[in-house]
Length: 376
Image (tube, rainbow, N blue to C red; front, side):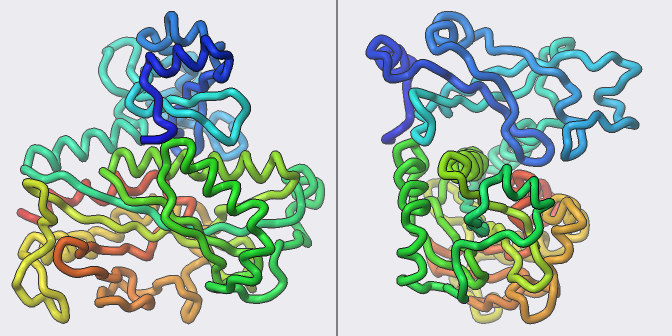
């Protein structure tokens, strides 16, 4: 795939001086990328296998990076030691939005036990996927992220205490081509950089709010999609910063504006076919027992995972009647007012969960946790 790199291709880019920096990064408990920048030659010589280390407090901080007391995993009493960042070389890719830079995502390994750091989001995801695979399934997923774009830079927004920000749009622009054209300086660049970084793009469009947009990337195997999701957000934020504008993935940046969502599409596959497809009538849907059980189990366990769907106080402000955000645990076929919107048919049949906000914490892995209970 365009943008992805093998080690040999990385070394060729280094030799031609088209890549000078390699970012080693992992996803923290807020869904942010943390890590280090490596000289590309050093990475190719040593860090591809050795990886690097990071302080374990990075999974226990607040939003402002202050250590939070009370965690058993990492605390002042234990002295805040290190964990090991092990590069997953299948994620090595060009970071096209940055100059002469590649990025590779890492798994976290405990320095003492040499096993995965259980609390790390990517470790949780891998664990759930192993359980899914053990039952003979694979899973495909896609996330639909919405965000607001402002004419203010991040520094200006900070200095204004995030008040009176100027959105790039000045009227409701849902699906509106003219207003979307006015922001193509940013959105077209985002589509191009994502595509050139091994993240295939489907489309972009204006959303309902002033300056609100959506850019959709292609669905993929769930781990790959989770990686695309976090890199997508990083790309858009850093691209906006380079243009002296800003974007926010906050769920509800203003009470009088539409909230932003992160709709999750998910399906199970078996022997190369969609396991949700079938001939049984499930309300208005023709599907399989697996589809019926999975949908019922997902709905039943929403209360258990709401802290991950909506991890901040701001996230909960999004749930308001007649606001395009769901307020009821219900499912329907192709109905945007329900928390669970079933779409497609046959091989394209999938479940779209409309509950999560863009601040959701790599939620694809949390959905799969309930497969065992859902299917008995």
